[in-house]
Length: 365
Ligand code: H2U
Ligand code: ZN
Image 1 (cartoon, rainbow, N blue to C red):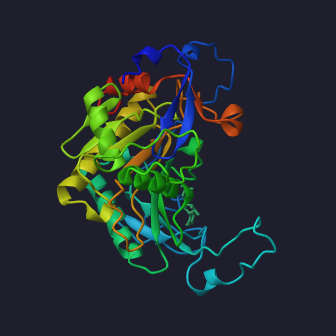
Image 2 (image 1 turned 60 degrees about the vertical axis):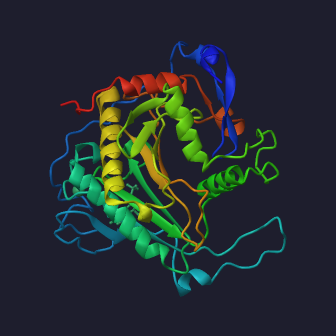
Protein backbone atom coordinates (compact mmCIF):
# COMPACT_ATOMS: atom_id res chain seq x y z
CA UNK A 1 0.00 0.00 0.00
CA UNK A 2 1.38 3.40 -0.94
CA UNK A 3 0.31 6.69 0.65
CA UNK A 4 1.81 8.79 -2.16
CA UNK A 5 -1.65 9.49 -3.50
CA UNK A 6 -2.41 11.14 -0.14
CA UNK A 7 0.31 13.77 -0.48
CA UNK A 8 -2.16 16.60 -1.14
CA UNK A 9 -5.32 15.26 0.43
CA UNK A 10 -6.42 15.44 4.07
CA UNK A 11 -6.37 11.99 5.65
CA UNK A 12 -5.86 10.29 8.96
CA UNK A 13 -3.09 7.94 9.97
CA UNK A 14 -3.04 5.23 12.61
CA UNK A 15 -0.35 4.78 15.25
CA UNK A 16 -0.18 1.01 15.84
CA UNK A 17 1.98 1.51 18.94
CA UNK A 18 -0.64 3.52 20.81
CA UNK A 19 -3.89 2.81 18.97
CA UNK A 20 -4.39 6.52 18.30
CA UNK A 21 -5.19 8.35 15.08
CA UNK A 22 -3.92 11.67 13.84
CA UNK A 23 -5.12 14.01 11.14
CA UNK A 24 -2.75 14.98 8.29
CA UNK A 25 -3.63 18.06 6.22
CA UNK A 26 -0.85 18.49 3.63
CA UNK A 27 -2.88 20.93 1.54
CA UNK A 28 -2.56 23.51 4.36
CA UNK A 29 1.24 23.58 4.36
CA UNK A 30 1.34 26.85 2.41
CA UNK A 31 -1.13 28.87 4.50
CA UNK A 32 0.21 32.24 5.76
CA UNK A 33 1.59 32.47 9.27
CA UNK A 34 0.57 35.43 11.45
CA UNK A 35 1.17 33.88 14.86
CA UNK A 36 3.85 34.28 17.50
CA UNK A 37 7.43 35.15 16.52
CA UNK A 38 9.75 34.45 19.40
CA UNK A 39 13.36 35.40 19.72
CA UNK A 40 15.71 32.53 18.87
CA UNK A 41 16.91 30.96 22.14
CA UNK A 42 20.58 31.42 21.27
CA UNK A 43 23.32 32.42 23.68
CA UNK A 44 26.96 31.42 23.82
CA UNK A 45 27.59 29.46 26.97
CA UNK A 46 30.87 29.37 28.94
CA UNK A 47 32.71 26.03 29.46
CA UNK A 48 32.06 26.45 33.16
CA UNK A 49 29.33 28.54 34.78
CA UNK A 50 29.87 29.30 38.46
CA UNK A 51 26.10 29.75 38.88
CA UNK A 52 25.13 26.42 37.25
CA UNK A 53 23.90 23.78 39.70
CA UNK A 54 25.11 20.98 37.43
CA UNK A 55 28.70 22.11 36.79
CA UNK A 56 31.47 20.22 38.64
CA UNK A 57 32.28 21.52 42.11
CA UNK A 58 29.17 23.75 42.32
CA UNK A 59 26.59 23.82 45.09
CA UNK A 60 23.07 22.64 44.28
CA UNK A 61 19.85 24.23 45.50
CA UNK A 62 19.65 21.91 48.53
CA UNK A 63 23.23 22.67 49.60
CA UNK A 64 24.89 19.48 48.29
CA UNK A 65 28.17 20.05 46.47
CA UNK A 66 28.80 18.33 43.12
CA UNK A 67 32.08 16.38 42.96
CA UNK A 68 34.75 17.62 40.54
CA UNK A 69 33.50 15.03 38.02
CA UNK A 70 35.17 14.53 34.66
CA UNK A 71 32.78 12.16 32.83
CA UNK A 72 29.14 11.45 33.67
CA UNK A 73 27.61 12.47 36.99
CA UNK A 74 24.38 10.99 38.36
CA UNK A 75 22.60 12.29 41.47
CA UNK A 76 19.23 11.88 43.15
CA UNK A 77 16.93 14.70 42.08
CA UNK A 78 16.69 17.20 44.92
CA UNK A 79 13.03 17.77 44.02
CA UNK A 80 11.86 14.24 43.20
CA UNK A 81 8.38 13.68 41.80
CA UNK A 82 8.11 10.45 43.80
CA UNK A 83 9.33 9.10 47.09
CA UNK A 84 10.57 5.60 47.81
CA UNK A 85 10.66 3.32 50.83
CA UNK A 86 8.43 3.78 53.83
CA UNK A 87 7.71 7.42 52.96
CA UNK A 88 5.91 6.37 49.76
CA UNK A 89 3.61 3.86 51.43
CA UNK A 90 1.80 6.29 53.70
CA UNK A 91 -0.72 8.98 53.10
CA UNK A 92 -2.78 7.76 50.12
CA UNK A 93 -6.23 7.19 51.54
CA UNK A 94 -9.02 5.00 50.29
CA UNK A 95 -11.65 6.96 48.47
CA UNK A 96 -15.41 6.70 48.71
CA UNK A 97 -16.16 5.87 45.07
CA UNK A 98 -14.77 3.78 42.20
CA UNK A 99 -14.86 6.98 40.22
CA UNK A 100 -12.29 8.51 42.54
CA UNK A 101 -9.36 6.16 42.16
CA UNK A 102 -5.92 6.78 43.60
CA UNK A 103 -3.10 4.44 44.52
CA UNK A 104 0.23 5.00 46.21
CA UNK A 105 3.16 5.41 43.81
CA UNK A 106 6.76 5.07 44.83
CA UNK A 107 9.81 5.77 42.76
CA UNK A 108 13.22 7.28 42.28
CA UNK A 109 14.16 10.40 40.29
CA UNK A 110 17.72 11.07 39.23
CA UNK A 111 19.53 13.67 37.15
CA UNK A 112 22.24 12.48 34.72
CA UNK A 113 24.85 15.07 33.70
CA UNK A 114 26.17 14.03 30.29
CA UNK A 115 29.41 16.02 30.51
CA UNK A 116 31.27 18.36 32.87
CA UNK A 117 31.27 20.95 30.06
CA UNK A 118 28.46 23.45 30.55
CA UNK A 119 28.43 24.59 26.91
CA UNK A 120 28.10 21.30 25.01
CA UNK A 121 25.08 19.31 23.81
CA UNK A 122 24.71 15.69 22.68
CA UNK A 123 25.48 16.84 19.13
CA UNK A 124 28.83 18.18 20.26
CA UNK A 125 29.98 15.27 22.44
CA UNK A 126 32.22 12.71 20.75
CA UNK A 127 31.25 9.08 20.11
CA UNK A 128 33.01 7.83 23.25
CA UNK A 129 31.32 10.43 25.43
CA UNK A 130 27.87 9.56 24.08
CA UNK A 131 28.65 5.85 24.49
CA UNK A 132 29.30 6.65 28.17
CA UNK A 133 25.79 8.16 28.37
CA UNK A 134 24.33 4.95 26.89
CA UNK A 135 26.38 2.84 29.34
CA UNK A 136 25.12 4.96 32.24
CA UNK A 137 21.53 4.53 31.08
CA UNK A 138 22.10 0.75 31.03
CA UNK A 139 23.82 0.57 34.41
CA UNK A 140 21.10 2.70 36.01
CA UNK A 141 18.45 0.36 34.59
CA UNK A 142 20.43 -2.66 35.79
CA UNK A 143 20.52 -1.28 39.33
CA UNK A 144 17.00 0.10 39.55
CA UNK A 145 15.37 -2.66 37.52
CA UNK A 146 16.57 -5.23 40.07
CA UNK A 147 14.56 -3.56 42.82
CA UNK A 148 11.24 -5.08 43.89
CA UNK A 149 9.60 -1.67 44.21
CA UNK A 150 10.45 -0.60 40.65
CA UNK A 151 8.94 -1.98 37.46
CA UNK A 152 9.70 0.75 34.93
CA UNK A 153 12.65 3.06 34.24
CA UNK A 154 11.89 6.09 32.09
CA UNK A 155 15.06 7.68 30.69
CA UNK A 156 14.61 11.08 29.04
CA UNK A 157 16.12 14.41 28.12
CA UNK A 158 14.39 17.77 27.91
CA UNK A 159 16.57 19.93 25.74
CA UNK A 160 16.17 23.68 25.47
CA UNK A 161 14.18 26.37 27.20
CA UNK A 162 11.31 25.87 24.77
CA UNK A 163 10.81 22.38 26.21
CA UNK A 164 10.97 23.64 29.77
CA UNK A 165 14.54 22.57 30.49
CA UNK A 166 15.76 24.60 33.39
CA UNK A 167 19.44 24.61 32.50
CA UNK A 168 21.56 24.47 29.30
CA UNK A 169 24.12 22.19 30.96
CA UNK A 170 23.82 18.86 29.06
CA UNK A 171 21.73 16.58 31.23
CA UNK A 172 18.92 14.09 31.19
CA UNK A 173 16.76 12.53 33.85
CA UNK A 174 15.39 9.20 34.90
CA UNK A 175 12.18 8.54 36.74
CA UNK A 176 11.86 4.93 37.87
CA UNK A 177 8.69 3.76 39.52
CA UNK A 178 6.42 1.07 40.76
CA UNK A 179 3.76 1.17 38.01
CA UNK A 180 4.35 1.27 34.26
CA UNK A 181 3.55 4.83 33.11
CA UNK A 182 0.72 5.54 30.66
CA UNK A 183 2.70 5.86 27.38
CA UNK A 184 4.80 2.69 27.67
CA UNK A 185 1.72 0.88 29.03
CA UNK A 186 -0.21 1.76 25.84
CA UNK A 187 2.73 0.64 23.71
CA UNK A 188 2.96 -2.59 25.63
CA UNK A 189 -0.72 -3.37 25.16
CA UNK A 190 -0.48 -2.85 21.40
CA UNK A 191 2.83 -4.70 20.96
CA UNK A 192 1.42 -7.61 22.93
CA UNK A 193 -1.80 -7.73 20.91
CA UNK A 194 0.17 -7.56 17.64
CA UNK A 195 2.55 -10.39 18.53
CA UNK A 196 -0.36 -12.52 19.68
CA UNK A 197 -2.30 -11.69 16.49
CA UNK A 198 -5.09 -10.94 18.90
CA UNK A 199 -7.81 -8.78 17.42
CA UNK A 200 -10.00 -9.19 20.46
CA UNK A 201 -7.50 -7.53 22.77
CA UNK A 202 -8.99 -4.51 24.54
CA UNK A 203 -7.49 -1.92 22.21
CA UNK A 204 -8.26 1.60 23.38
CA UNK A 205 -9.66 3.00 20.13
CA UNK A 206 -12.71 1.09 18.95
CA UNK A 207 -12.01 2.01 15.34
CA UNK A 208 -8.54 0.47 15.38
CA UNK A 209 -7.83 -1.76 12.41
CA UNK A 210 -7.65 -5.41 13.33
CA UNK A 211 -4.07 -6.33 14.25
CA UNK A 212 -2.83 -8.88 11.72
CA UNK A 213 -1.05 -11.90 13.14
CA UNK A 214 2.48 -10.52 13.27
CA UNK A 215 5.53 -12.28 11.95
CA UNK A 216 7.56 -10.83 14.78
CA UNK A 217 7.45 -7.98 17.27
CA UNK A 218 5.42 -5.04 15.93
CA UNK A 219 8.35 -2.66 15.59
CA UNK A 220 10.55 -5.18 13.79
CA UNK A 221 7.79 -5.82 11.25
CA UNK A 222 7.31 -2.05 10.98
CA UNK A 223 11.02 -1.53 10.35
CA UNK A 224 10.90 -4.04 7.48
CA UNK A 225 8.04 -2.06 5.88
CA UNK A 226 9.92 1.23 6.25
CA UNK A 227 13.14 -0.24 4.83
CA UNK A 228 11.15 -1.41 1.82
CA UNK A 229 9.38 1.94 1.30
CA UNK A 230 12.42 4.11 2.05
CA UNK A 231 10.69 7.49 1.94
CA UNK A 232 10.55 8.02 5.70
CA UNK A 233 14.12 6.85 6.40
CA UNK A 234 16.61 9.48 7.59
CA UNK A 235 19.82 7.44 8.06
CA UNK A 236 21.05 4.13 9.40
CA UNK A 237 24.16 2.44 10.75
CA UNK A 238 24.92 -1.26 11.32
CA UNK A 239 22.65 -1.44 14.39
CA UNK A 240 20.11 1.40 14.30
CA UNK A 241 17.76 3.13 11.89
CA UNK A 242 16.51 6.70 12.24
CA UNK A 243 13.16 7.38 10.55
CA UNK A 244 10.18 9.70 10.70
CA UNK A 245 7.36 7.39 11.76
CA UNK A 246 4.37 7.17 9.41
CA UNK A 247 2.21 8.37 12.32
CA UNK A 248 4.53 11.19 13.52
CA UNK A 249 2.66 13.97 15.33
CA UNK A 250 5.45 16.52 15.92
CA UNK A 251 6.75 18.16 12.70
CA UNK A 252 10.26 16.65 12.86
CA UNK A 253 9.56 13.75 15.20
CA UNK A 254 11.83 10.72 14.70
CA UNK A 255 12.09 7.18 15.96
CA UNK A 256 15.42 5.39 16.54
CA UNK A 257 14.90 1.67 16.01
CA UNK A 258 17.37 -1.16 16.53
CA UNK A 259 17.76 -3.59 13.63
CA UNK A 260 17.91 -6.57 15.99
CA UNK A 261 15.32 -7.55 18.58
CA UNK A 262 16.29 -5.76 21.83
CA UNK A 263 13.79 -5.88 24.69
CA UNK A 264 15.60 -3.66 27.20
CA UNK A 265 18.60 -1.36 27.21
CA UNK A 266 20.45 -3.70 29.58
CA UNK A 267 20.37 -6.36 26.81
CA UNK A 268 22.38 -4.30 24.33
CA UNK A 269 25.76 -5.60 23.16
CA UNK A 270 28.78 -3.26 23.15
CA UNK A 271 28.47 -2.92 19.36
CA UNK A 272 24.77 -2.04 19.62
CA UNK A 273 25.58 0.57 22.27
CA UNK A 274 28.13 2.12 19.91
CA UNK A 275 25.46 2.04 17.21
CA UNK A 276 23.01 3.88 19.43
CA UNK A 277 25.66 6.47 20.41
CA UNK A 278 26.39 7.05 16.72
CA UNK A 279 22.69 7.42 15.91
CA UNK A 280 22.17 9.87 18.80
CA UNK A 281 25.01 12.08 17.63
CA UNK A 282 23.87 12.03 14.02
CA UNK A 283 20.24 12.92 14.68
CA UNK A 284 21.19 15.62 17.20
CA UNK A 285 23.58 17.12 14.61
CA UNK A 286 21.03 17.03 11.78
CA UNK A 287 18.48 18.65 14.09
CA UNK A 288 20.91 21.46 15.00
CA UNK A 289 21.57 22.02 11.29
CA UNK A 290 17.87 22.23 10.41
CA UNK A 291 17.49 25.83 11.62
CA UNK A 292 21.16 26.38 12.65
CA UNK A 293 20.39 26.53 16.35
CA UNK A 294 20.83 24.25 19.31
CA UNK A 295 17.63 22.34 18.53
CA UNK A 296 15.10 21.83 21.33
CA UNK A 297 13.37 18.51 21.89
CA UNK A 298 12.15 15.98 24.42
CA UNK A 299 13.58 12.54 23.81
CA UNK A 300 13.50 9.30 25.70
CA UNK A 301 13.95 5.56 25.70
CA UNK A 302 11.01 3.16 25.66
CA UNK A 303 11.77 -0.39 26.71
CA UNK A 304 10.10 -3.34 28.43
CA UNK A 305 9.21 -3.09 32.12
CA UNK A 306 11.59 -4.48 34.72
CA UNK A 307 8.90 -6.65 36.26
CA UNK A 308 10.42 -10.12 35.98
CA UNK A 309 8.60 -11.07 32.74
CA UNK A 310 10.41 -11.67 29.43
CA UNK A 311 8.23 -9.28 27.34
CA UNK A 312 9.23 -10.66 23.95
CA UNK A 313 6.59 -8.38 22.42
CA UNK A 314 8.68 -5.35 23.27
CA UNK A 315 11.20 -3.69 21.00
CA UNK A 316 13.40 -1.02 22.56
CA UNK A 317 13.22 2.34 20.77
CA UNK A 318 13.82 6.05 21.29
CA UNK A 319 11.38 8.84 20.49
CA UNK A 320 12.49 12.39 19.68
CA UNK A 321 9.70 14.98 19.94
CA UNK A 322 10.94 18.41 18.82
CA UNK A 323 8.50 21.36 18.99
CA UNK A 324 9.85 23.48 16.13
CA UNK A 325 7.90 23.77 12.91
CA UNK A 326 9.41 26.12 10.33
CA UNK A 327 12.19 28.19 11.88
CA UNK A 328 14.19 28.67 15.05
CA UNK A 329 11.26 30.57 16.51
CA UNK A 330 8.05 29.13 15.12
CA UNK A 331 6.92 26.13 17.11
CA UNK A 332 3.98 23.84 16.72
CA UNK A 333 1.29 24.41 19.29
CA UNK A 334 -0.73 21.44 20.49
CA UNK A 335 -3.85 23.45 21.20
CA UNK A 336 -7.48 23.69 20.22
CA UNK A 337 -8.34 20.74 18.00
CA UNK A 338 -5.28 18.79 19.20
CA UNK A 339 -6.35 19.15 22.83
CA UNK A 340 -9.98 18.46 22.20
CA UNK A 341 -10.05 16.29 19.09
CA UNK A 342 -6.87 14.59 17.93
CA UNK A 343 -3.34 15.54 16.89
CA UNK A 344 -3.05 17.21 13.50
CA UNK A 345 -0.14 18.12 11.23
CA UNK A 346 0.31 19.87 7.88
CA UNK A 347 3.83 18.83 6.86
CA UNK A 348 3.73 15.12 6.03
CA UNK A 349 6.09 12.60 7.62
CA UNK A 350 7.55 12.01 4.14
CA UNK A 351 8.28 15.72 3.64
CA UNK A 352 9.90 15.94 7.09
CA UNK A 353 12.07 12.89 6.36
CA UNK A 354 13.19 14.42 3.07
CA UNK A 355 14.25 17.62 4.88
CA UNK A 356 16.14 15.69 7.56
CA UNK A 357 17.80 13.40 4.97
CA UNK A 358 19.15 16.42 3.11
CA UNK A 359 20.99 17.85 6.13
CA UNK A 360 24.71 17.57 6.87
CA UNK A 361 26.07 15.42 9.68
CA UNK A 362 28.74 18.04 10.35
CA UNK A 363 27.35 20.57 12.82
CA UNK A 364 27.10 24.17 11.63
CA UNK A 365 29.87 26.36 13.06
P1 H2U B 1 15.24 19.78 33.62
O1 H2U B 1 16.19 20.81 33.09
O2 H2U B 1 14.90 18.74 32.60
O3 H2U B 1 14.07 20.43 34.27
O4 H2U B 1 16.03 18.96 34.76
C1 H2U B 1 16.64 19.57 35.86
C2 H2U B 1 16.30 18.77 37.10
O5 H2U B 1 17.28 19.06 38.07
C3 H2U B 1 14.94 19.12 37.69
O6 H2U B 1 14.15 17.96 37.75
C4 H2U B 1 16.67 19.10 39.35
C5 H2U B 1 15.27 19.63 39.10
O7 H2U B 1 14.38 19.14 40.06
N1 H2U B 1 17.50 19.92 40.22
C6 H2U B 1 18.11 19.33 41.33
O8 H2U B 1 17.91 18.15 41.58
N2 H2U B 1 18.95 20.08 42.11
C7 H2U B 1 19.20 21.42 41.91
O9 H2U B 1 19.99 22.01 42.62
C8 H2U B 1 18.48 22.13 40.82
C9 H2U B 1 17.66 21.30 39.90
ZN1 ZN C 1 26.89 23.80 34.03
